[in-house]
Image 1 (cartoon, rainbow, N blue to C red):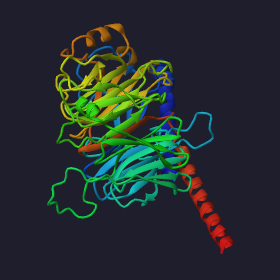
Image 2: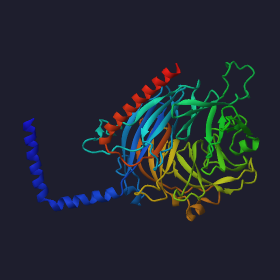
Image 3: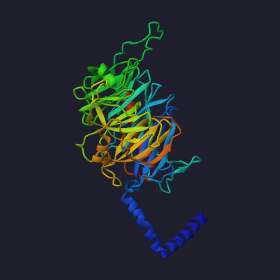
Image 4: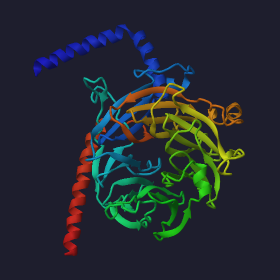
Amino acid sequence: MVKRKREETVKDRQSSKQSAKAVKATVSEETPSISAADSPSVTLQIITGSYERVLHGFTAAVSPASFTSQDAEEVGDNSSLVQFVDTFLFEAHTSAIRCLALSPLPKTDSTESPQVILASGATDERVNLYSLSAAPVAVNEHYPTVPTLAGNKILENPKNREVGTLMHHSAPISALEFPSRSKILVGSEDNTISITRTRDFSVVSTIKAPHPKVQGRPSGDTAPPGGSPSGVNDIAVHPSMKLMLSVGKGEKCMRLWNLVTGKKAGVLNFNREILQSVKEGKWSTGEGRKIVWNAKGDEFAVAFEWGAVVFGIDSTPVCRVFPNPRSKLHQMKYINPNPSSDDSDELLAVSTEDGRVIFYSTKQVQDAPEGDDSPIPYAEAVAQLGGRAAGFPGRVKDFEILGLKDQRAAGKDDLLVVTGNSEGLVRVWLLHGNDLTRDDTKKKSSGNKEKKDVQVGKLLNAYGTGNRITCLKAFVMLAPEDPSTLEDSEEGDEDEVSQDDDSSEESDEDEE
Protein backbone atom coordinates (compact mmCIF):
# COMPACT_ATOMS: atom_id res chain seq x y z
CA MET A 1 0.00 0.00 0.00
CA VAL A 2 2.86 2.42 0.78
CA LYS A 3 4.51 1.74 -2.56
CA ARG A 4 1.30 2.61 -4.43
CA LYS A 5 0.98 5.90 -2.56
CA ARG A 6 4.55 6.87 -3.48
CA GLU A 7 3.90 6.10 -7.11
CA GLU A 8 0.73 8.16 -7.05
CA THR A 9 2.52 11.13 -5.52
CA VAL A 10 5.25 10.95 -8.17
CA LYS A 11 2.61 10.88 -10.89
CA ASP A 12 0.83 13.85 -9.33
CA ARG A 13 4.08 15.85 -9.29
CA GLN A 14 4.77 15.02 -12.92
CA SER A 15 1.25 15.94 -13.96
CA SER A 16 1.48 19.24 -12.07
CA LYS A 17 4.73 20.07 -13.84
CA GLN A 18 3.24 19.25 -17.23
CA SER A 19 0.19 21.35 -16.52
CA ALA A 20 2.38 24.27 -15.43
CA LYS A 21 4.44 24.07 -18.64
CA ALA A 22 1.40 23.87 -20.95
CA VAL A 23 -1.02 26.44 -19.61
CA LYS A 24 -1.96 27.73 -23.04
CA ALA A 25 -2.84 24.28 -24.30
CA THR A 26 -5.22 23.61 -21.41
CA VAL A 27 -6.97 26.92 -21.92
CA SER A 28 -7.50 26.18 -25.60
CA GLU A 29 -8.84 22.71 -24.77
CA GLU A 30 -11.27 23.98 -22.12
CA THR A 31 -12.95 26.52 -24.38
CA PRO A 32 -14.98 23.97 -26.39
CA SER A 33 -16.09 22.21 -23.19
CA ILE A 34 -17.54 25.47 -21.91
CA SER A 35 -19.51 25.97 -25.10
CA ALA A 36 -20.73 22.37 -24.94
CA ALA A 37 -21.90 22.91 -21.38
CA ASP A 38 -23.87 25.95 -22.47
CA SER A 39 -25.82 23.81 -24.95
CA PRO A 40 -25.93 20.22 -23.62
CA SER A 41 -27.18 17.35 -25.74
CA VAL A 42 -30.83 16.34 -25.74
CA THR A 43 -31.28 12.84 -24.29
CA LEU A 44 -34.22 10.63 -25.21
CA GLN A 45 -35.32 7.48 -23.42
CA ILE A 46 -36.70 5.02 -25.98
CA ILE A 47 -38.47 1.76 -25.10
CA THR A 48 -39.53 -0.88 -27.63
CA GLY A 49 -41.58 -4.06 -27.36
CA SER A 50 -41.30 -6.90 -29.84
CA TYR A 51 -42.73 -10.19 -31.02
CA GLU A 52 -39.75 -11.89 -29.40
CA ARG A 53 -41.07 -10.92 -25.90
CA VAL A 54 -38.08 -8.58 -25.43
CA LEU A 55 -38.45 -5.23 -23.69
CA HIS A 56 -35.56 -3.06 -24.88
CA GLY A 57 -34.69 0.33 -23.41
CA PHE A 58 -31.93 2.62 -24.63
CA THR A 59 -31.05 6.31 -24.59
CA ALA A 60 -30.37 8.49 -27.61
CA ALA A 61 -28.17 11.53 -26.96
CA VAL A 62 -28.76 14.09 -29.73
CA SER A 63 -25.80 16.47 -30.05
CA PRO A 64 -26.40 20.24 -30.38
CA ALA A 65 -24.67 20.17 -33.80
CA SER A 66 -27.62 18.25 -35.26
CA PHE A 67 -29.93 21.24 -34.67
CA THR A 68 -27.61 23.76 -36.32
CA SER A 69 -26.36 21.81 -39.36
CA GLN A 70 -28.43 22.39 -42.48
CA ASP A 71 -27.04 19.66 -44.72
CA ALA A 72 -29.50 17.04 -45.90
CA GLU A 73 -26.99 14.31 -46.64
CA GLU A 74 -27.79 10.70 -45.83
CA VAL A 75 -26.74 9.66 -42.37
CA GLY A 76 -25.30 6.23 -41.65
CA ASP A 77 -25.76 3.99 -38.65
CA ASN A 78 -22.46 5.19 -37.14
CA SER A 79 -23.32 8.88 -37.20
CA SER A 80 -21.98 11.05 -34.40
CA LEU A 81 -25.11 13.22 -34.29
CA VAL A 82 -26.96 10.69 -32.11
CA GLN A 83 -25.25 8.30 -29.67
CA PHE A 84 -27.22 5.25 -28.54
CA VAL A 85 -26.58 3.52 -25.19
CA ASP A 86 -28.49 0.47 -23.94
CA THR A 87 -30.05 0.79 -20.48
CA PHE A 88 -32.00 -2.49 -20.16
CA LEU A 89 -32.78 -5.53 -22.30
CA PHE A 90 -34.66 -8.62 -21.10
CA GLU A 91 -37.62 -10.90 -21.77
CA ALA A 92 -40.48 -9.21 -19.99
CA HIS A 93 -43.31 -11.58 -20.95
CA THR A 94 -43.91 -15.15 -22.01
CA SER A 95 -45.49 -14.09 -25.31
CA ALA A 96 -45.43 -11.17 -27.75
CA ILE A 97 -45.59 -7.66 -26.30
CA ARG A 98 -48.51 -5.76 -27.80
CA CYS A 99 -48.63 -2.33 -26.14
CA LEU A 100 -46.68 0.07 -23.93
CA ALA A 101 -47.63 3.11 -21.87
CA LEU A 102 -45.69 5.80 -19.99
CA SER A 103 -46.97 7.95 -17.17
CA PRO A 104 -46.58 11.74 -17.58
CA LEU A 105 -43.36 13.34 -16.41
CA PRO A 106 -43.43 15.05 -13.00
CA LYS A 107 -43.84 18.82 -13.03
CA THR A 108 -40.76 20.96 -12.63
CA ASP A 109 -42.02 22.59 -9.43
CA SER A 110 -43.15 19.33 -7.81
CA THR A 111 -41.32 17.53 -5.01
CA GLU A 112 -41.80 14.09 -6.56
CA SER A 113 -38.80 12.01 -7.54
CA PRO A 114 -37.90 12.32 -11.24
CA GLN A 115 -39.34 8.97 -12.25
CA VAL A 116 -41.98 7.66 -14.64
CA ILE A 117 -43.93 4.40 -14.65
CA LEU A 118 -43.65 2.10 -17.65
CA ALA A 119 -46.41 -0.43 -18.30
CA SER A 120 -46.13 -3.28 -20.80
CA GLY A 121 -48.98 -5.51 -21.93
CA ALA A 122 -48.77 -8.76 -23.85
CA THR A 123 -50.87 -11.71 -24.94
CA ASP A 124 -50.03 -13.53 -21.68
CA GLU A 125 -52.78 -11.59 -19.80
CA ARG A 126 -50.22 -9.76 -17.64
CA VAL A 127 -49.34 -6.08 -17.25
CA ASN A 128 -45.81 -5.52 -15.98
CA LEU A 129 -44.97 -2.25 -14.24
CA TYR A 130 -41.53 -0.65 -14.02
CA SER A 131 -40.15 2.53 -12.48
CA LEU A 132 -37.80 4.39 -14.84
CA SER A 133 -35.56 7.30 -13.97
CA ALA A 134 -36.47 10.46 -15.90
CA ALA A 135 -32.87 11.70 -15.75
CA PRO A 136 -29.89 9.99 -17.42
CA VAL A 137 -26.72 9.11 -15.57
CA ALA A 138 -23.77 11.41 -16.22
CA VAL A 139 -20.91 9.33 -17.63
CA ASN A 140 -17.51 9.94 -16.03
CA GLU A 141 -14.42 8.03 -14.97
CA HIS A 142 -16.17 6.73 -11.85
CA TYR A 143 -19.27 5.59 -13.77
CA PRO A 144 -18.22 4.70 -17.35
CA THR A 145 -20.17 2.91 -20.04
CA VAL A 146 -19.58 -0.84 -20.48
CA PRO A 147 -18.43 -1.82 -23.99
CA THR A 148 -19.59 -5.06 -25.56
CA LEU A 149 -18.42 -7.34 -28.35
CA ALA A 150 -21.41 -6.25 -30.43
CA GLY A 151 -20.09 -2.67 -30.50
CA ASN A 152 -22.95 -1.04 -28.61
CA LYS A 153 -22.47 0.56 -25.20
CA ILE A 154 -24.29 -0.32 -21.98
CA LEU A 155 -25.03 2.05 -19.11
CA GLU A 156 -27.35 0.61 -16.49
CA ASN A 157 -29.26 3.02 -14.29
CA PRO A 158 -29.73 1.61 -10.75
CA LYS A 159 -32.95 3.61 -10.37
CA ASN A 160 -34.67 1.56 -13.08
CA ARG A 161 -36.41 -1.30 -11.33
CA GLU A 162 -39.45 -3.54 -11.55
CA VAL A 163 -42.47 -2.52 -9.49
CA GLY A 164 -44.92 -5.39 -9.91
CA THR A 165 -47.44 -7.16 -12.13
CA LEU A 166 -51.17 -6.65 -12.66
CA MET A 167 -53.13 -9.86 -13.23
CA HIS A 168 -56.69 -8.54 -13.28
CA HIS A 169 -57.59 -9.75 -16.78
CA SER A 170 -58.23 -13.18 -18.23
CA ALA A 171 -57.38 -12.43 -21.87
CA PRO A 172 -54.58 -10.75 -23.87
CA ILE A 173 -53.93 -7.08 -23.13
CA SER A 174 -54.76 -4.81 -26.07
CA ALA A 175 -54.58 -1.20 -24.78
CA LEU A 176 -52.81 0.77 -22.04
CA GLU A 177 -53.10 4.44 -21.14
CA PHE A 178 -52.01 6.75 -18.32
CA PRO A 179 -54.47 9.69 -18.18
CA SER A 180 -52.48 10.99 -15.21
CA ARG A 181 -49.68 9.91 -12.88
CA SER A 182 -52.21 8.48 -10.42
CA LYS A 183 -54.29 6.20 -12.71
CA ILE A 184 -53.70 3.57 -15.39
CA LEU A 185 -56.37 2.19 -17.71
CA VAL A 186 -56.02 -1.31 -19.15
CA GLY A 187 -58.11 -2.67 -22.03
CA SER A 188 -58.27 -6.40 -22.67
CA GLU A 189 -59.81 -8.91 -25.04
CA ASP A 190 -62.06 -10.13 -22.22
CA ASN A 191 -64.21 -7.03 -22.95
CA THR A 192 -63.25 -5.24 -19.74
CA ILE A 193 -61.44 -1.98 -19.03
CA SER A 194 -59.87 -1.76 -15.58
CA ILE A 195 -58.92 1.46 -13.80
CA THR A 196 -56.02 0.95 -11.39
CA ARG A 197 -54.54 3.36 -8.85
CA THR A 198 -50.76 3.67 -9.19
CA ARG A 199 -50.22 4.47 -5.51
CA ASP A 200 -50.94 0.92 -4.36
CA PHE A 201 -51.88 -0.69 -7.71
CA SER A 202 -55.35 -1.65 -6.59
CA VAL A 203 -58.28 -1.78 -9.01
CA VAL A 204 -60.59 1.18 -8.45
CA SER A 205 -63.23 0.28 -11.02
CA THR A 206 -63.88 -2.15 -13.86
CA ILE A 207 -65.89 -1.23 -16.95
CA LYS A 208 -67.51 -4.18 -18.70
CA ALA A 209 -68.18 -3.77 -22.40
CA PRO A 210 -70.93 -5.97 -23.89
CA HIS A 211 -69.93 -8.90 -26.05
CA PRO A 212 -70.71 -8.21 -29.72
CA LYS A 213 -73.39 -10.14 -31.52
CA VAL A 214 -72.11 -12.88 -33.78
CA GLN A 215 -72.50 -11.64 -37.35
CA GLY A 216 -71.45 -13.19 -40.63
CA ARG A 217 -70.60 -16.60 -39.15
CA PRO A 218 -71.40 -19.66 -41.25
CA SER A 219 -74.34 -21.83 -40.21
CA GLY A 220 -72.15 -24.87 -39.57
CA ASP A 221 -69.60 -23.02 -37.49
CA THR A 222 -68.12 -25.20 -34.77
CA ALA A 223 -66.34 -22.44 -32.86
CA PRO A 224 -66.52 -22.89 -29.08
CA PRO A 225 -68.42 -20.44 -26.86
CA GLY A 226 -66.53 -17.19 -26.87
CA GLY A 227 -64.68 -18.12 -30.04
CA SER A 228 -66.19 -15.25 -32.01
CA PRO A 229 -64.13 -12.03 -32.25
CA SER A 230 -64.50 -9.93 -29.11
CA GLY A 231 -62.41 -7.60 -27.01
CA VAL A 232 -61.32 -3.98 -26.70
CA ASN A 233 -59.07 -2.75 -29.51
CA ASP A 234 -58.19 0.69 -28.18
CA ILE A 235 -59.24 3.35 -25.67
CA ALA A 236 -58.91 7.14 -25.59
CA VAL A 237 -59.50 9.35 -22.55
CA HIS A 238 -60.82 12.89 -23.05
CA PRO A 239 -58.47 15.66 -21.84
CA SER A 240 -61.05 16.52 -19.17
CA MET A 241 -60.62 12.94 -17.84
CA LYS A 242 -64.39 12.58 -17.48
CA LEU A 243 -65.13 10.74 -20.72
CA MET A 244 -63.57 7.83 -22.56
CA LEU A 245 -64.03 6.33 -26.01
CA SER A 246 -63.43 2.69 -26.90
CA VAL A 247 -63.53 0.56 -30.04
CA GLY A 248 -63.71 -3.21 -30.04
CA LYS A 249 -63.47 -6.33 -32.16
CA GLY A 250 -66.52 -7.50 -34.05
CA GLU A 251 -68.31 -4.17 -33.52
CA LYS A 252 -69.08 -1.58 -36.17
CA CYS A 253 -69.42 1.11 -33.54
CA MET A 254 -67.60 3.01 -30.82
CA ARG A 255 -68.70 3.41 -27.24
CA LEU A 256 -68.68 6.46 -24.98
CA TRP A 257 -68.09 5.91 -21.25
CA ASN A 258 -68.65 8.20 -18.29
CA LEU A 259 -65.54 7.87 -16.11
CA VAL A 260 -67.24 9.66 -13.20
CA THR A 261 -69.92 6.98 -12.84
CA GLY A 262 -68.17 4.16 -14.71
CA LYS A 263 -71.22 3.54 -16.89
CA LYS A 264 -71.99 3.65 -20.60
CA ALA A 265 -72.88 7.11 -21.91
CA GLY A 266 -73.68 6.32 -25.55
CA VAL A 267 -72.96 4.31 -28.70
CA LEU A 268 -72.15 5.63 -32.16
CA ASN A 269 -72.68 3.13 -34.98
CA PHE A 270 -70.57 3.30 -38.11
CA ASN A 271 -73.07 3.57 -40.95
CA ARG A 272 -72.45 2.54 -44.53
CA GLU A 273 -71.38 6.04 -45.52
CA ILE A 274 -68.58 6.06 -42.94
CA LEU A 275 -67.39 2.53 -43.74
CA GLN A 276 -67.39 3.08 -47.50
CA SER A 277 -65.36 6.27 -47.08
CA VAL A 278 -62.42 4.22 -45.76
CA LYS A 279 -62.93 1.27 -48.15
CA GLU A 280 -64.46 -1.06 -45.56
CA GLY A 281 -66.39 -3.40 -47.84
CA LYS A 282 -68.83 -6.23 -47.34
CA TRP A 283 -66.17 -8.73 -46.29
CA SER A 284 -64.27 -6.32 -44.01
CA THR A 285 -64.65 -6.33 -40.25
CA GLY A 286 -65.72 -2.67 -40.10
CA GLU A 287 -64.22 -2.34 -36.60
CA GLY A 288 -62.17 0.56 -35.35
CA ARG A 289 -58.51 -0.30 -34.83
CA LYS A 290 -57.25 2.90 -33.13
CA ILE A 291 -58.90 5.93 -31.55
CA VAL A 292 -57.40 9.19 -30.30
CA TRP A 293 -58.49 12.61 -29.01
CA ASN A 294 -56.77 15.87 -29.87
CA ALA A 295 -55.28 18.04 -27.11
CA LYS A 296 -58.21 20.50 -27.08
CA GLY A 297 -60.78 17.72 -26.85
CA ASP A 298 -63.00 19.10 -29.63
CA GLU A 299 -62.40 16.30 -32.16
CA PHE A 300 -61.29 12.67 -32.29
CA ALA A 301 -60.20 10.25 -34.99
CA VAL A 302 -61.01 6.58 -35.50
CA ALA A 303 -58.59 4.50 -37.59
CA PHE A 304 -59.73 1.54 -39.66
CA GLU A 305 -57.60 -0.87 -41.68
CA TRP A 306 -57.08 1.38 -44.74
CA GLY A 307 -58.08 4.84 -43.55
CA ALA A 308 -59.37 7.00 -40.71
CA VAL A 309 -62.39 9.21 -40.08
CA VAL A 310 -62.24 12.42 -38.02
CA PHE A 311 -65.31 13.30 -35.95
CA GLY A 312 -66.29 16.56 -34.29
CA ILE A 313 -67.40 16.99 -30.72
CA ASP A 314 -70.98 16.29 -31.87
CA SER A 315 -69.87 12.89 -33.28
CA THR A 316 -70.48 13.91 -36.90
CA PRO A 317 -67.84 13.09 -39.55
CA VAL A 318 -65.68 16.11 -40.39
CA CYS A 319 -63.21 14.60 -42.85
CA ARG A 320 -61.44 11.36 -43.70
CA VAL A 321 -57.80 10.36 -43.96
CA PHE A 322 -56.87 8.09 -46.84
CA PRO A 323 -53.17 7.66 -47.80
CA ASN A 324 -52.21 8.03 -51.45
CA PRO A 325 -50.93 5.64 -52.69
CA ARG A 326 -53.19 3.29 -50.78
CA SER A 327 -51.62 1.70 -47.70
CA LYS A 328 -52.66 0.24 -44.36
CA LEU A 329 -52.56 2.34 -41.19
CA HIS A 330 -50.73 1.20 -38.07
CA GLN A 331 -50.65 4.18 -35.69
CA MET A 332 -51.96 7.74 -35.49
CA LYS A 333 -51.45 10.69 -33.14
CA TYR A 334 -52.28 14.38 -32.94
CA ILE A 335 -49.29 16.73 -32.88
CA ASN A 336 -48.79 20.45 -32.40
CA PRO A 337 -46.56 21.77 -35.24
CA ASN A 338 -45.73 24.84 -33.13
CA PRO A 339 -44.92 23.60 -29.60
CA SER A 340 -44.16 27.17 -28.48
CA SER A 341 -47.75 28.20 -29.28
CA ASP A 342 -50.81 26.61 -27.71
CA ASP A 343 -53.30 28.17 -30.15
CA SER A 344 -51.97 26.59 -33.35
CA ASP A 345 -54.07 24.03 -35.21
CA GLU A 346 -53.04 20.46 -34.58
CA LEU A 347 -52.12 18.00 -37.31
CA LEU A 348 -53.02 14.32 -37.47
CA ALA A 349 -49.97 12.11 -38.06
CA VAL A 350 -50.46 8.53 -39.26
CA SER A 351 -47.93 5.75 -39.96
CA THR A 352 -48.44 3.42 -42.90
CA GLU A 353 -47.51 -0.02 -44.16
CA ASP A 354 -45.09 1.37 -46.75
CA GLY A 355 -42.89 3.21 -44.22
CA ARG A 356 -44.39 6.71 -44.27
CA VAL A 357 -45.46 9.10 -41.52
CA ILE A 358 -48.01 11.42 -43.15
CA PHE A 359 -49.20 14.69 -41.61
CA TYR A 360 -52.80 15.73 -42.33
CA SER A 361 -54.61 18.98 -41.62
CA THR A 362 -58.15 18.35 -40.42
CA LYS A 363 -59.04 22.04 -40.87
CA GLN A 364 -58.17 22.20 -44.58
CA VAL A 365 -60.24 19.66 -46.50
CA GLN A 366 -60.87 18.76 -50.13
CA ASP A 367 -64.31 17.88 -51.41
CA ALA A 368 -64.89 14.32 -52.53
CA PRO A 369 -64.82 13.94 -56.31
CA GLU A 370 -67.94 13.07 -58.27
CA GLY A 371 -68.82 9.41 -58.22
CA ASP A 372 -67.10 8.77 -54.88
CA ASP A 373 -68.62 6.21 -52.53
CA SER A 374 -69.00 8.78 -49.73
CA PRO A 375 -69.51 12.56 -49.61
CA ILE A 376 -67.17 12.94 -46.60
CA PRO A 377 -64.35 15.33 -47.65
CA TYR A 378 -60.68 14.37 -47.61
CA ALA A 379 -58.23 15.83 -45.10
CA GLU A 380 -55.40 17.64 -46.85
CA ALA A 381 -51.98 16.00 -46.62
CA VAL A 382 -49.45 18.65 -45.57
CA ALA A 383 -46.23 16.61 -45.73
CA GLN A 384 -44.76 13.17 -45.23
CA LEU A 385 -41.65 11.72 -43.61
CA GLY A 386 -39.80 8.65 -44.92
CA GLY A 387 -41.33 6.09 -47.24
CA ARG A 388 -40.14 3.86 -50.03
CA ALA A 389 -39.64 6.80 -52.40
CA ALA A 390 -37.17 8.31 -49.92
CA GLY A 391 -35.36 4.99 -49.47
CA PHE A 392 -36.94 3.96 -46.13
CA PRO A 393 -39.18 0.92 -46.72
CA GLY A 394 -40.72 -1.25 -44.02
CA ARG A 395 -43.94 -0.74 -42.12
CA VAL A 396 -43.82 1.82 -39.30
CA LYS A 397 -45.47 -0.02 -36.42
CA ASP A 398 -45.27 2.88 -33.97
CA PHE A 399 -43.80 6.35 -33.61
CA GLU A 400 -43.38 9.22 -31.15
CA ILE A 401 -43.17 12.97 -31.86
CA LEU A 402 -41.47 14.96 -29.09
CA GLY A 403 -41.42 18.74 -28.66
CA LEU A 404 -38.19 20.51 -27.65
CA LYS A 405 -39.38 23.94 -26.55
CA ASP A 406 -37.68 23.61 -23.13
CA GLN A 407 -34.31 22.51 -24.56
CA ARG A 408 -31.61 25.15 -24.96
CA ALA A 409 -29.79 23.35 -27.77
CA ALA A 410 -32.87 23.14 -30.03
CA GLY A 411 -35.26 25.68 -31.46
CA LYS A 412 -38.64 26.35 -29.89
CA ASP A 413 -40.51 24.75 -32.78
CA ASP A 414 -38.12 21.83 -33.40
CA LEU A 415 -39.49 18.30 -33.15
CA LEU A 416 -37.81 14.93 -32.80
CA VAL A 417 -39.60 12.02 -34.48
CA VAL A 418 -38.77 8.48 -33.32
CA THR A 419 -40.05 5.69 -35.60
CA GLY A 420 -39.88 1.93 -35.12
CA ASN A 421 -40.48 -0.48 -37.98
CA SER A 422 -41.11 -4.20 -38.06
CA GLU A 423 -37.54 -4.88 -39.22
CA GLY A 424 -36.21 -3.79 -35.83
CA LEU A 425 -34.83 -0.39 -36.87
CA VAL A 426 -35.42 2.68 -34.70
CA ARG A 427 -34.82 5.93 -36.58
CA VAL A 428 -34.46 9.39 -35.04
CA TRP A 429 -35.52 12.29 -37.28
CA LEU A 430 -35.25 16.05 -36.85
CA LEU A 431 -38.33 17.96 -38.00
CA HIS A 432 -38.72 21.73 -37.93
CA GLY A 433 -42.19 22.86 -37.03
CA ASN A 434 -42.20 25.60 -39.67
CA ASP A 435 -41.80 22.91 -42.35
CA LEU A 436 -45.36 21.83 -41.53
CA THR A 437 -46.87 25.32 -41.40
CA ARG A 438 -45.09 27.40 -44.05
CA ASP A 439 -47.04 28.58 -47.08
CA ASP A 440 -44.95 26.89 -49.79
CA THR A 441 -45.52 23.47 -48.21
CA LYS A 442 -49.28 24.01 -48.24
CA LYS A 443 -49.23 25.19 -51.84
CA LYS A 444 -47.27 22.15 -53.01
CA SER A 445 -49.48 19.71 -51.11
CA SER A 446 -52.79 21.36 -52.04
CA GLY A 447 -54.52 20.96 -55.35
CA ASN A 448 -54.86 17.70 -57.17
CA LYS A 449 -55.15 14.52 -55.11
CA GLU A 450 -52.72 12.73 -57.45
CA LYS A 451 -49.78 14.95 -56.45
CA LYS A 452 -47.12 13.57 -54.16
CA ASP A 453 -46.73 14.86 -50.64
CA VAL A 454 -43.82 17.11 -49.69
CA GLN A 455 -40.93 15.26 -48.04
CA VAL A 456 -39.84 16.79 -44.73
CA GLY A 457 -37.50 15.84 -41.90
CA LYS A 458 -33.82 14.93 -41.68
CA LEU A 459 -32.62 11.51 -40.54
CA LEU A 460 -30.11 11.86 -37.69
CA ASN A 461 -29.28 8.23 -36.97
CA ALA A 462 -30.71 4.70 -36.90
CA TYR A 463 -30.36 1.91 -34.35
CA GLY A 464 -30.95 -1.78 -34.95
CA THR A 465 -32.60 -3.58 -32.05
CA GLY A 466 -32.45 -7.04 -33.64
CA ASN A 467 -36.11 -7.73 -32.82
CA ARG A 468 -39.37 -7.23 -34.69
CA ILE A 469 -40.84 -4.13 -33.07
CA THR A 470 -44.54 -4.07 -32.23
CA CYS A 471 -44.78 -0.94 -30.06
CA LEU A 472 -42.60 2.02 -29.08
CA LYS A 473 -42.56 4.78 -26.46
CA ALA A 474 -40.14 7.65 -25.89
CA PHE A 475 -39.78 10.83 -23.83
CA VAL A 476 -37.28 13.67 -23.41
CA MET A 477 -35.24 13.12 -20.27
CA LEU A 478 -34.37 15.72 -17.63
CA ALA A 479 -30.91 17.00 -16.71
CA PRO A 480 -28.32 14.26 -16.00
CA GLU A 481 -27.87 12.97 -12.46
CA ASP A 482 -24.62 12.82 -10.53
CA PRO A 483 -23.57 9.13 -10.25
CA SER A 484 -22.39 9.72 -6.67
CA THR A 485 -26.02 10.15 -5.57
CA LEU A 486 -27.16 6.82 -6.99
CA GLU A 487 -25.89 4.73 -4.10
CA ASP A 488 -27.51 7.05 -1.57
CA SER A 489 -30.79 6.92 -3.46
CA GLU A 490 -30.69 3.11 -3.53
CA GLU A 491 -30.17 2.98 0.24
CA GLY A 492 -33.00 5.47 0.69
CA ASP A 493 -35.31 3.39 -1.49
CA GLU A 494 -34.51 0.26 0.53
CA ASP A 495 -35.26 2.12 3.76
CA GLU A 496 -38.57 3.34 2.34
CA VAL A 497 -39.51 -0.17 1.27
CA SER A 498 -38.68 -1.56 4.72
CA GLN A 499 -40.70 1.22 6.38
CA ASP A 500 -43.65 0.51 4.08
CA ASP A 501 -43.45 -3.20 4.92
CA ASP A 502 -43.37 -2.44 8.65
CA SER A 503 -46.32 -0.08 8.38
CA SER A 504 -48.31 -2.63 6.36
CA GLU A 505 -47.61 -5.31 8.97
CA GLU A 506 -48.73 -2.96 11.75
CA SER A 507 -51.93 -2.13 9.89
CA ASP A 508 -52.63 -5.83 9.39
CA GLU A 509 -52.17 -6.46 13.12
CA ASP A 510 -54.52 -3.58 13.96
CA GLU A 511 -57.17 -5.01 11.63
CA GLU A 512 -56.87 -8.42 13.29
